[in-house]
Length: 232
Image 1 (cartoon, rainbow, N blue to C red):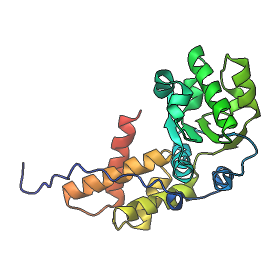
Image 2: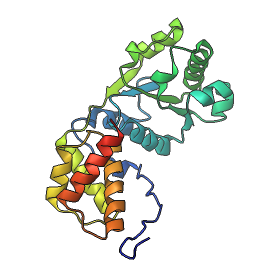
Image 3: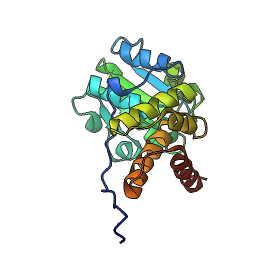
């Protein structure tokens, strides 16, 4: 190792997933309003849907903190009956529900049981997917009818203004001083997702520390090119 290189510590910032850390914009304001409205939902379930990186998982974590919800996924459903999964809880998050359905009849039965159990308890279920729940592949008619009837809120991919705001916040969270030209450069060229924003800011932080240099547009361009080459 040369004397001019500094090895960055392998420490990852934990993502801030609180309500105050979620930036509200036209692309997500309807979904945020539904989360803020809880527990005054018109039914026992709500679906958040939209493209990857639009903020669905973040809002699920916000709602978990509000409701004390149990976190479930396909593996948890396969391993546990809904009553065991919930325990005494009256709320549950099934992030990625759309992908968990359509191929496993027993899993669909358990999702239906989970829905019904929460409804009986006066509780709530929050599910997510890429498409509206009425369009999810589902072989179980009773579950399909409940999916079609549940309230749903769409999140769109973040626009340039929201991506800029997210980048500014992520840099500030890491106490990094970055010029507006860097933020604008990234926001107009990067993938429109919160995950990409977090990954790029983390990579810029590591690279700037290792190179002992400020974060500039040329450095941002190099890091962005490396990121895109890994995600082609």
